[in-house]
Image (cartoon, rainbow, N blue to C red; front, side, top):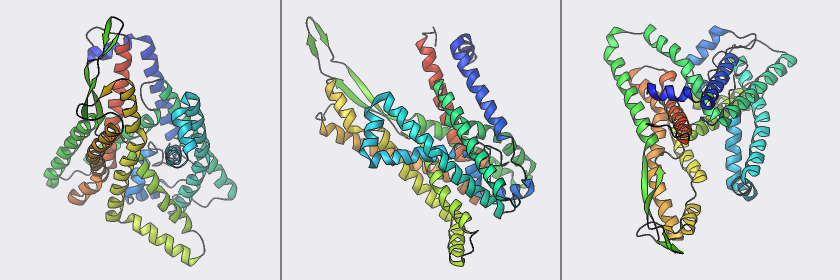
Length: 423
């Protein structure tokens, strides 16, 4: 391992990329530490301790929400905008053609529209969040100008983080948005571990031991499922061109168990954000009927059982949805047929596409159930042990492990390109 690290820093271009990404992450953490004025820190702490959903939302804001910083929204609105655009590609054929068939220029236009949609979403989410914080006395009374200023600052913070994320992605050593979330989780780990030890009760030693064992098993399971794949055998027919023979080889088509990665959990949290946000906003109006409905919706989402079941279902559903977006069996079948490849025992064309679709559905079931279990794992652990720690929850572990694996693979691919001996 140390030899590999040494080799990484011997390559000037790769070393500069890594240092650049680290510098941008440092800039992000500085922004996440700059608080907005007029925040009651004691009320804020009590609010986060009593709200499971805000704890999850804080993870995906990169830790900027826990101290109401200028980056309190994190990259959440950008992720929501991406979800909307992905859903529209399933509905609007022209958008799908733009994204999949018009090459780099089409994807750039698609990404530009995603950025534009992020701005009003960030403004709406900032307004809803400030309304929630005001209702909990975390932020004092604000006049119109102060409210407008905070919304502009929060929206600008999201756009700034979106820009930082895209700069990181361009360096080719990982997904920038995922790395921002990763940095927020890692930054919260020391505080979470400190809190765990400060409240340590020797009479519950075996409970803590069980908690540690579950954490280790979770990490092992995340690595196993993230790296797990089903290899579909593929053979290529022999072809003769001139005096040379081509093809006649056998290889495999890898199908990932968790094709969607951590995206379904991010999608699910983004969708679950809106009912609570809108309910907290509507609780401020003067109409009694609206207030009663909003209060009911808010109480439903505070119910741990409903929250866990709904969260689990959303994660499973989004796993299938995102896999359907990124995995096209018809296109894979068509490409195999053009290259003279076939799956032994399966006719080329439509039969191959149906076979791949059936296999992908089966292995996606395992991946989706695993993701759903990981998502609700903190709720299960809290129900049985009474220990609550979002910093080392299942979702956090999944994101950290996934980002580390993806980043390591990106770095290794760049090193292999330079053909280092012994690598």
